[in-house]
Structure formats: C-alpha cells, structure tokens
Length: 567
Image (cartoon, rainbow, N blue to C red):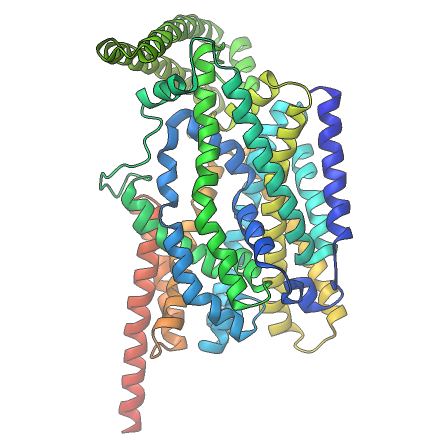
C-alpha cells in the first residue's frame, strides 16, 4: 500500500476512537452506559442496527460471493421485512415495557432464573465465538493485502474498538456506527463507479449486465425446494424468517440497540429501517462483486487471489503442475475475453440470434475458467491440508489494492475496518451487558453502586475483547474452523427463539417446561447438524419447533401432575 493509503487508515483509526469517546454522555450511570439512558433517536438506532449487521465479512466475503456466484445470496434476506414487522408488534413492546437491560432478563420474570441463565449463557458462548470470526475473517485477508502479520491486523481491528466501547458505552457505539455505515456506503458506491468507468469502450453498462446475466449471476430467485440447498427462495422466506426473528428479537447485540430508543414507536421505526434498506444495501454489496467479475473478464485475472498461497505453489514441489495450470488459465481467460466482447457487440447491435450463439460460447469459456480455478484451489487444499479452503474472501481486497488509485485504496481499506469495528463494538457491548446483568449482578453481587457495576462492565468488555482476539488468531491458523463458527448462529438461534415464543405466545408454558424444551432444542439441532444434510438455515426451524413442542408437553404434564396432587 502507498504511504498515503496507510495515512488514511491511520487517521481513520485515531479519529474513530477519539470521536467515540468525545460523544460519550452519561456513561457514569448504569442505564446511560448500557442503554444510553433510553434517549437515542430512531434513525441513529436504525443505522446502528444496520451497521452491526454489515460486518467486514459482508464487505469482503459477500463481495467475493457476488464475484463467484452472483446475486443468489440475496434470497437469504427476503424474510427480513416480515421478521421486522413481527418483532415490532411482539417482542419490542414486551422488552420496552418490561424496562429490562437484556432480553434474557425478561425470561426470569416470565419463567425462572435457570432458564434466563441458560439462555444468556448460550448467547455468550455463540456470540463470543462468532465475534472471533468477525475479527479473524478480515484480519486474515488484510494481513495478506497489507503485508503485516495476522496478529497485527487482529490488534489493529480489535484494540481501538475495545477502547471506545469500554469507556464510551453504548452511546459511543451507536454514534460511531452512524459514521461508519456512511463510510461503508460511500466506499461501496466509489468502487461501483470505478468498476463501471473501467469497462472497455465496446462494453457499456447494459452489456456488462448482459455478460453477468449470461452466467446466471443476476439470478435473484430460485424456487427449487431442496432442504440441502442453502440459498433458495424457500430457505430465504421460511427458514431465514426464524433466523431473523431470533437474531433481531433475542440476540442481545440487536435487542440492546432498540432498547436505547426513546419509545416503543421509535424502537419500531429503527427496526423498520432495516426492513426498508437492508435488502437494497445487500444488493449493492453483491453487485460490487458482480462488477468485479465483469472487470476481470477484460483485465488480467489472477488464477488465485491469495498471493501468499500463489507464491508458495509457484516455488514449492508442485511448481510444475501450477505452471501448467497457469498456461491453461491464460488461454482460457483469453478465450473468455474474446467470447465476452463478441456477446457485448452482438447485444449492442440488437442481433438476437448472434447474441444467443455468443452467449452459449461465453458460458462455455467461463465454465473452462472456473474449472481451472477449481484445480488450482485443489492444489492449495492439498498443500495446506485445509479441505475447506476457498479464496473468494480475497477477491475484493485484491481488486482494491491492485487496481484502485492511491487514496481510494485507503478509503476502501478504512471502510473494511469500519465494517469490522461497527459489528465488534456492538457485540462487545452486548457481551459485557449480559455478563454483568445476567450473571454478576444476578448471582454474585445483587446490590452495589452504579460505579461498581460500571467498573466490572469495563473489565468484562476488555476480557471479551481479548478472548475474541485470541479466538481470531486461533481461527486464522485453522481455516476449517471459520466455516464451523459461521454456522454457530443457526446452531443456537432457533432454540433460543423457541424459548421466547413460549414466553410470549403460550401463557400456560412453565419455567421447567421452557428449560427442558431448550435442552431438547439444542440436542435436536446437534443431531440434525451431525447426521443429516439439511442446510443450516433450516436448523433454526428445527430448534424452535422442538423447543415449543417439548416445552409445552412438559408444561402440560407438570400442570396435570400438580392438579392431580391437589385433588
């Protein structure tokens, strides 16, 4: 990277810490520190919610997915507006009227302490491990593109975030999130503009979209019903509905956002902002990846986007095999480039017959390129022993650092940092809140001053920051772990959602029933994940259904036994 780009990244990191601390207000009180004294405007809360979701994994992973697979991933979000409406009329008013600090605090009021503690423990376990991945995924990529160690990038991402979260509380988190999401969107739009401007003279924007569409990369609906297929219309509208209801309705990192709003109505409006804007924003991210694909149709394309692994193969014992693949890759990309130009020219001329013929040739040449890349990735897997290795996360950062002008590189790298930090800060605040409110204040020291609890909260924030950083470095060394932890959310979310469904929708559910149902739900998801090929999105449905079914069965049995004894 150029010194100017390094300077931009450094200035951003210093500014975001300073600004987060500068905007801190009333963080010397427990409610001010954890919930910003329930005083934030709906639009700031809404932007913070969106910033929390838009992690660096989205910036680098989803753009890479758009490059490799197109817009299909957008189907994952089709249930989001429905989930926001459901939550706006159910859990949001429940939590606001209950005046709770955490979502799990409500479970004790409705059921008992053990159900609250178990649900909060599951949150701490899943969220802390996921936070490690949120840090690790961009750290691994940025370490390659910036030329520094993984530990160095982990610290660059995690330490500044922990500082302003530790001392500023949720108010600092929210207002820095607002600025960070603006930076992220500006960076994405700038990338799109550069990619469009970089198109060859003979390829206009309509022709670029035609090329992407010819390979299926503009497909946003797949009505195939296959429980083993991750991203279809049905998984995105049925299974994902359970995931979103659980994530936005029961995950403390999201619940804490809308508990900071001034009123129930403003909390609802903050959630509905995601309903309106999340899908367009996700489409923008994926479209960046699609345009990167079009860009590399005409610009020299790397066979592998991770230059470290490319160098290791080029200089290692499989160098001859790699050189052979490179020659084939060069010929295949050249043929694809010619086929792409032919398709663009036929499309611009309005010659439908010639365009159809050219499209078939273009798809065939693109399939050849993908097949050779698959062989190259297999060489990397063999050399590293990582059976799950894929380099799509390196696609966008490689494009940024090798093809964007000086200054814009720094802006986009800063946007990736912003995406990581906005998610990390929210999750650190949530982890600290659940630790102090659900465990320390509930079971260790029930009566103490706000100053005492704030001190413990800052220690908890620092602890979770260090823990997540350690997980991030560990995950970087064990690439297969990243895929496992990415599925962690769906392993827990459905079962936790089931407990809240019992709490809100089934007045006859008992604490013992909810607790047993939660254990049964976790066991059923573990069984489905281990012994079936059901896609992980559907684990949310399985977990919620089992918790509700078992929870009600135990509750009814418990009430029947009590009635029999009473008789």
